Image 1 (cartoon, rainbow, N blue to C red):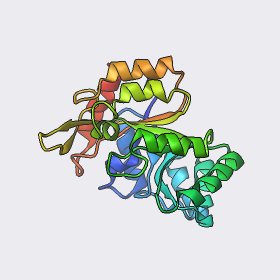
Image 2 (cartoon, one colour):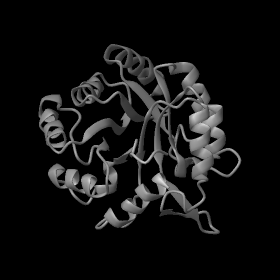
Image 3 (tube, one colour):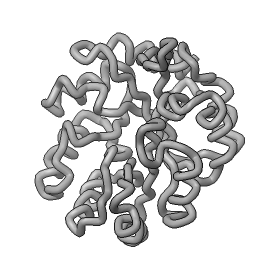
Length: 246
């Protein structure tokens, strides 16, 4: 990575803090100026009200580069999520689909994506979640691409196992379809339970992953995400930033 941060932070890291002005200061404190905003900090069903949230971050010099993770069911009201992303200047939405509704949701999401010029990245969320493993992702990309691509959550990719879920191999396999990255790292207990750790200090081969992204011409949005230390995430997040820039 370059010495200047080219990545942001997921607002879910600051979920203990509901005031966006406080969150903006915390983003500045860890040395970043970009954020992916989640529903903890904004109601994406209310585009007019959301503009006030956008103003808070703009006044702090922080760009909202994505919103999500949003779960699309194909309801017409979900178009408002694109309106909110557009109002913020974000060109990406991180998303999930549900197995019961994806056939009706995907065509609408494709249409909205084309309408607003906003790409949609399916957030892989482990082996227990629909869209968390490659065969399902391949099917969804065939159905919804090129408007719908991938948002690789590096930790959750690893959760499905070292062969099917190797983030480095995903960066190679899905080159050109990767629209977002959640830089997250896990260590695993013998029973498979995961635990957050500093990005690059767990099971994620950070240099190899970044090299594969560069080789594949990655041009999407990227954020770090650390979900532990809920009441005081700043020190660990600063260490994540330093690790990314090392």
